[in-house]
Length: 348
Image (tube, rainbow, N blue to C red; front, side, top):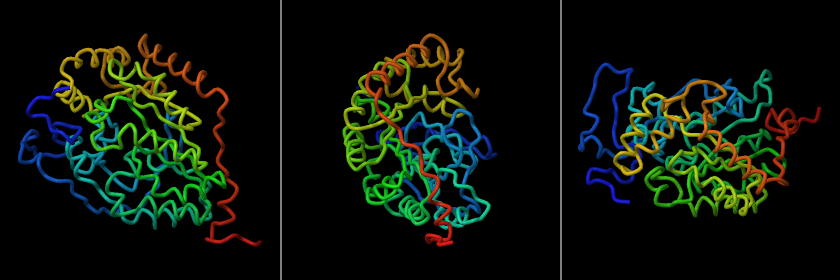
């Protein structure tokens, strides 16, 4: 697939739209500005746990030690949070990474409170906890160590094989039914992956990661997400089979939705990266979103509606029936944390 001469390889977003919260505007297509390397910016929030009350999300508490994500997935819904910090949802999201260095200490303080119930934690739910910054800061590793110290149930979502670095802690947690892992898989086409998610683990690395986690006894769910109509929707059954063969015990899916600034970023990207498919893909997304590229409505925003969304749903149900019929997803063990709340097993 040939891209135009001005296509920025190694980045997802090709533009840097101005933040709607900033009065000052800048040249969003400046080559000089686009050449800036990734920058890590330390921030110091007072709290770290986020309560999630969406009926479309399968968890209620999340923790995001990093804001922004160097993986550069062009469709990422988390891009829309970056303008709140004064940055663009485009290239800034991929190269201005906010580091919450106090996250482990804030987390430990929160779960030791007598008033805190044992609610399974999701790492992260927004940006990837195993993005490149984790090599330097190891915040995810430190949080997992705290989870093991207090026997606190924790799930992780990632598309990076770096998770295997923490296999030792994950195995300990899994033996006590204290962890689940979700790996995101968008496509089996490596050429598409490189453009769509330029700094993530390759398709083969991701499949190998699923297999290694499963072999180690860690329950693995795979999110076939997002399904992009006209680009990846034909891969639902092959992806499901590939991950089932490697030991995944569960799958889920979402249909791409392009809310806020993501619509402009995605449309610009696909017209540059895949110009021959651009109109077809955009029109099929609109077919799933009542004529729009976005959808904010609960209960429909994750799966879409209409004929194409129905076909995706039917393929997914067939995949589950064919490849996951007899697989069991374990429940979290919520009984251990209260006993370890003070950092040691209570004897009284």
